[in-house]
Length: 121
Image (spheres, one colour):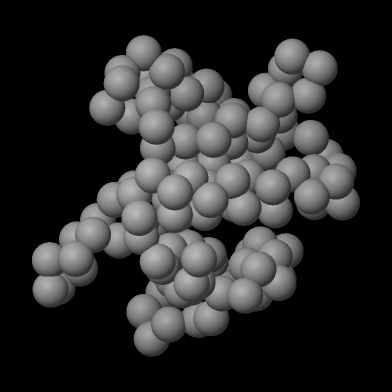
């Protein structure tokens, strides 16, 4: 499971390296980081590029109520669609995380036969 310290370490690595910089969205409130989301480009069995949203972390206790996770996922989807010209995004969501699973399904994603959810953008 990810911790806030691991988040800060990963954030510092990604901010300093251009290779990683465009694969994350950071949410700020009053100048402080309150959340982030990342995606990774993968190739499927046929060699097609796919974007996989694999981590959405938030620090605020009421982040779900405020819709911070939803905004992060929507921004990642928009970025992938506009800059990478991909028409589908994949989201990793553990079945034990009912809050994130409900959010992913609210955004229109469908459970695939694998362990991720698929969503047309």
